[in-house]
Length: 623
Image (cartoon, rainbow, N blue to C red):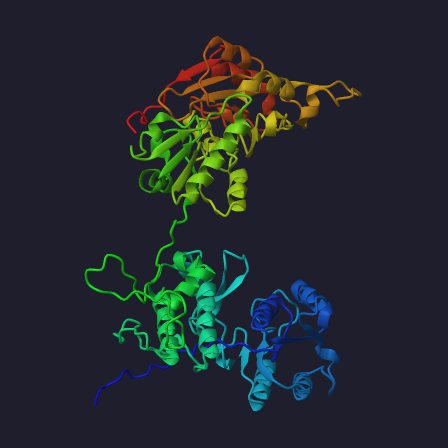
């Protein structure tokens, strides 16, 4: 006789229950009770929460759900029965109440949560008493943090969203460690979710629709209504008889369910998630002209397969691929400029996946050189006064290419979301049916100062930093932050407006002066001292990088002295600029340290009004 595996105890019988209008009682009103209540509501249950104090002691979520009439919250002290001032009478009150209810399916005791911040924590002795009551009534019970008292346990559950509708789908997963590690179960759930396609919920929705259509057509033909692809063989590929014109309704119904099983088993998840109603109908009809009464239709009879025919039609053909595959759009960051600072994801998008690259005009040639020669590259035609027009042109090109099934890489400097207009493009593409994938890049906000030997934060010199743009939307002025000695200010896209920025930062109004239309109105907070260090960094990380160091008072003259500018450029303002120069200076934030600021500047600039450094630091040349 064949030997079969021996059962090993300690596991759970993992089931998926739905309780249509049946009752689940939750004892306790903490946040865990709210979580249990939400899960029960999603299973279409009627939820009753019992706790001492009722709504007055319930957590915010339970109070809100009670106000929305999603569930009922009862005060334990108000239940009919004996006085509830001790364990026995409290249990009897709950027992008495349970006896008045019908269709109680589960009881969850949550006020035994160990380490809870609530003031009402049920002792184990009281929990045991409630467990005995539930078991006497044949009601399964779960007691939080007491697995030995539980008849069932909750899995770490996730419900997938249908990306097409944005609503929860029918697909759920649950993981349990059978009480051996709840945190581990949550982690494993996250790991599983991260490895599944994002549109797996939509696939479940479409397969559910396909099964419904198959069963409905069978019922209309008077065939068994219990049809289910789970009832067919373990593999949907076992040989079947060749389909004929004499196929009965029952045979057609079974064949359709086999096709549902095949599609579920073998089609790619993204393909399942995008099935249209017509494609579902084609699947069930098998791409033929047969009716489902075992006779030919009144339309043109189907052509049968014959060797040597120049034009044939399969009676069970399936259209496995859409006529025009759907394209993809990536928004990727190229980093500050040096090709070695591309992320692996961005490098892969450019070199392996792209059919079309739409690049910002300041992305260095060294990055563009990595793109294979067969990939089309379009550079933004942005120039002063045409930025918005060029931006719209690129977005329209991306949609047009994606509609042709191409993978579009929208290549931006630095990080796409740091003044890269990525948000505008995400919304633009979403409105047109594409969810762009945003791939972060190394932002010049951090990398640029680093390549110039400037930390944006440094103990003893800068406790925080703030990032601003020098120009607002459609060229509007932006409000700059006021001076704070312990803070570094990083300004992007501000070099072209340097005189105006310097005026805004340094202008001091006189007491009683109306600053409504003065430069001070463009600044939040006090003015910057004129001796505040500033570094102008051009083409950060590139071989021709240039750093101009000076003070707010002299930086304009320093920039004028070097002649031709090298965009892109950025401004770094604050005492962190000099903190790593030479032997370093981390005494900037010491008490009364500001009295020595002029001496600091003299040492830093070696008595000159500015200092200019060209090229990368030693060690980066060969990368």
